[in-house]
Image (cartoon, rainbow, N blue to C red; front, top):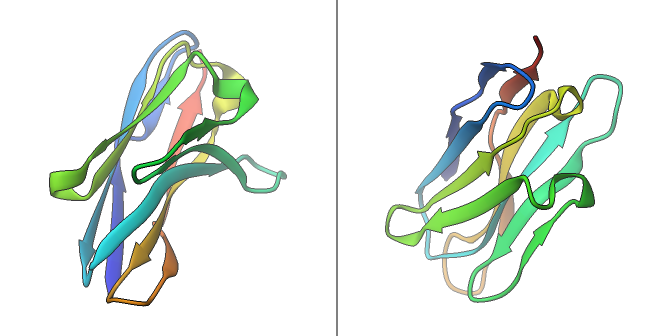
Length: 120
């Protein structure tokens, strides 16, 4: 069993910053990718940023230049540094991980989500 635990959400004023964290624990043979998605009220869940192990990093166009994804591989943790936040960034942010719990396996896991509210 694999668990993803997020932290770091909250209320911030427009133009402010927040840093989200997500730690993976449990049965982990290899982490293939980690990333963040978000879902605003009344909208579908969308990709924010994703980092492929040993590969590329992708960002949604709406957050390029403002958000940065990073990884601490030793601790199976992914971060999302969010700067210059806008009201339209308000959403529940979900951690997502593509993990091999054992050799020749591959599954996607989701965290429970953390709420980010950008408002004055």
